Image (cartoon, rainbow, N blue to C red; front, side, top):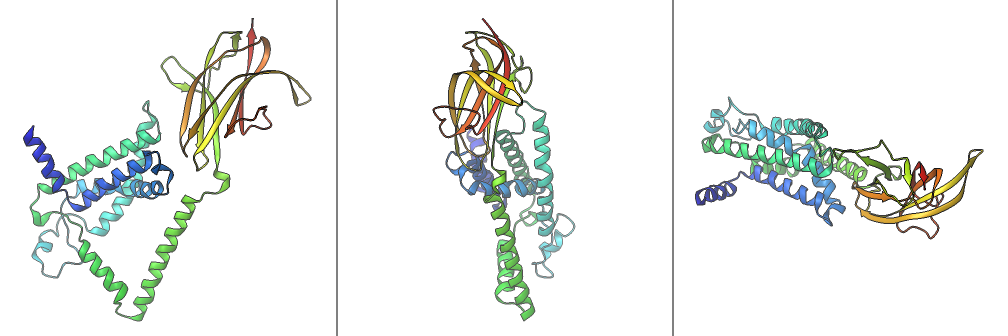
Length: 336
């Protein structure tokens, strides 16, 4: 047990810098997506985009290609660079493949989850992609440690920084200087545009889902087989669902009513209405809530309307369809 702990400590302490950075991004993304306060901040979107679009692919490529290749920054005649020329991929290919594979890996994970009981939801998807990435990082680290030090891939941070500083601040010609300024401006403009589109969505994209479900014998929630025959004083189960797509934390209140109505000439008149229950929940953006409710009718009749009204915030003293944010209902028969 002690030897295993020592090997684990040695592995963590000797984890290559780029692989350690990937592990850090995974941990930060998990915290930003799940922590109660942090998940409401723009940090969740920023690290989430980097996590989905780059990190899984980079970890997979790192596991496939642990060896280094010839870098254009190596001085001509460098024996180490020449020795690794027949294997591995260069930095540009590694970055490009990381983006491409990440775009492929994430949907494949979602496809697999779609056929599991967990479905495509935030926590299962985040756990699956994070687990895949950490396993790939473990394989990548092991394969690098098995190589001689001079053949291991490493990210040449200092060389890249030196070249970038020389290109930006010491251009060879005036044309290079103008092109560098244009490149930096275009990158900033593109980043700002994407950030604005993600952080400030259009008003038309803000909505809340409100629906009724039933539970099958094996525990699956379906939008089918709703109960239609009730007895006064005897409860029947229903599942009420709310989905928050308002792009902000929202307080919800639900009011359920049993109504006797008269329908004529495309108009509905409420003849009798009794409130059955009132309940609520607070949801963050992109959160979904399901609650099991027992519906117990208080009077009998045929073609009664079992009405559920959704409000953002508190419900008014006299809740109706006209003042509700969302509504859903069932037509039921109630016997004595």
